Amino acid sequence: MRHHLTLRIGPATFRIGSAWPAPVAQLASLYAAYPQPSDAVADFTVRLQPTSLVRRFIRPSIFITGDHGLADAAPMSLSHGLLAAEMGMNLQMALGWRRHLLLHASSVEKDGRVLVMTGESGSGKSTLAALLGERGWRFMGDEFALLDLDSGAILPFPRLVSLKNRAIDVVAGQVGEGRMGPLLAATAKGDIRHMVPRHDAVARMGQGAMPALLLFPRFGHAADMRAVGQAEIFMRLTQASTNYVALGEPAFTALTRFVRDVPARAIDFPTGEDAIAMVERLWEEMA
Amino acid sequence: MTATKLYRRDGADAVTACALDDIVLLYHPRSGQTHMVISPVPEILDQLVDGGPASVAQIHDRLARSFDLGPADEAMDEIAAHLDALVALGLVRPA
Image (tube, rainbow over all chains, first blue to last red; front, side, top):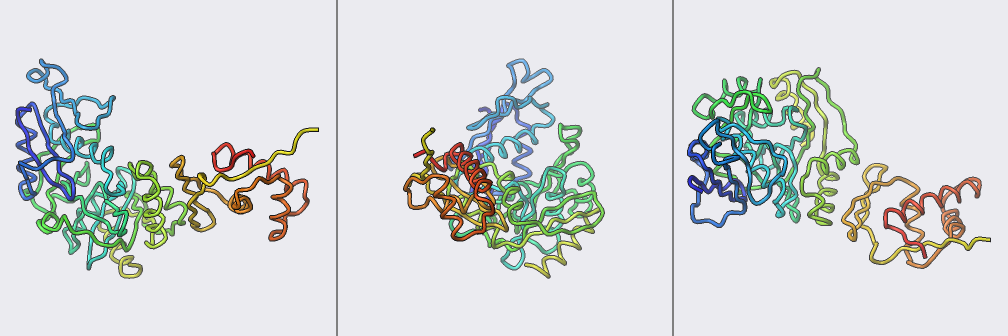
């Protein structure tokens, strides 16, 4: 394709091609600190192409495709090209990654141990990981935590943090404009802005660590904390994994070990500050 | 008179089990499926571990050595229902 970029995030290498220059230029700028090995063999290809020839010029519409595709993925406006590229990379990981058990979860590390947070979109797991990453924790990822099938370690996948709606101002106020991407207004998920993780998150993106605490965060509720049964945790984590079935028995063994070994809590919180206080307290008590 | 139904477990249907709280997870490599079951399903499967065929009555008698099953008729009906469900899942086969 006319415009392209090869990018490594954690253990995965992506080649992103685009019919337009803008999405690739934005990615190159926001991922400037990441390895960009132009001669590497990519694990995945992401292509942003016009829905039709005329759509490259008139009201440009992007169709996301690549090694793995979804037939019913809706075309997006060119002004949301950065989001399309990010969604394309996520899609390739979710559908194609086989080297680790992939959990739809954010993760941060402190003192060589990992806090894993899983929940639906809007649960606050991304924002919480982003905020903790500014307060003495190493940010490991806001979307996917990679569980190593042999060692049980969590490996980082520290792509850009995707902040939505109210979370944008909360985080932008703390990290400064220099690490924030352009505002993508009125996408299918609302307003979105991407945040570049701190330097240490990128520099150490090859380093995994053992999980020490699992949280199920839920934003927008009165502060509360509950124990979660192991069987429920197992069920929720299989639902949060896109490749559990594909990986077969090694995934069963790795996930049951994770559930048995890692203490877990569900936490509800009204604001990010409340959540951070709860997380720090739980970490002291349980991890 | 109908023939007595017999059940058996095939070696290729061996499962990897893991108990979490009061639920037992069974990973079935042949189908790639993970089943979540509760008592008495794991106990019924254990009675068929030798791979040989067994009737509902025989399985009931084996279980009764270790568990208080209550009235035999009701217990046998329940065991038969569980066995048929296990056949449907592919974990147990008609012998």
